[in-house]
Length: 143
Image 1 (tube, rainbow, N blue to C red):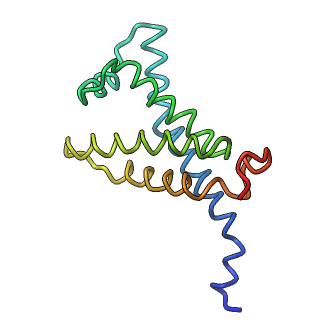
Image 2: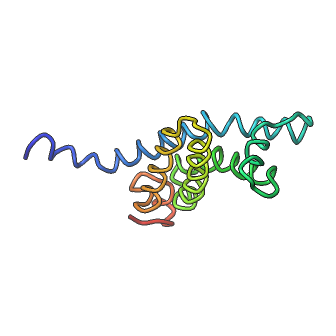
Image 3: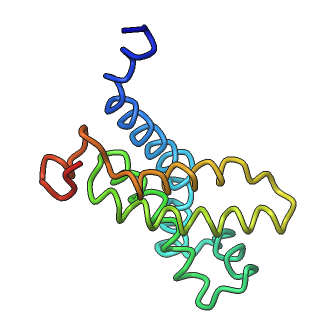
């Protein structure tokens, strides 16, 4: 057996690393800032620029959709990383990142990171959380 063939035993660990790493990055590097902005808006009445961004895309009730997006990135990212209700989290993240890619494309912004999150979440949506997940422990998603 070749060295590369032996690496296949790490397949489940690789899926875990992809899911956990991307979920934590999404949650803390993108979602946390939006959630703290939402908190400041709701509790202290500060303006929240992200809601204005969502409004510029033509969404009705932009504050609601911006809040859903922020919570999807933060809480959904944590669920995604932990492998808890992973396919549901992946579905919401995929939709959220699809909108993000669209926004970045129409405003000439860099879309690569949003596209990467979209591809990863879509892959996990199809594949499932894998062996090292809370879903598997709770028998929500046996793979």
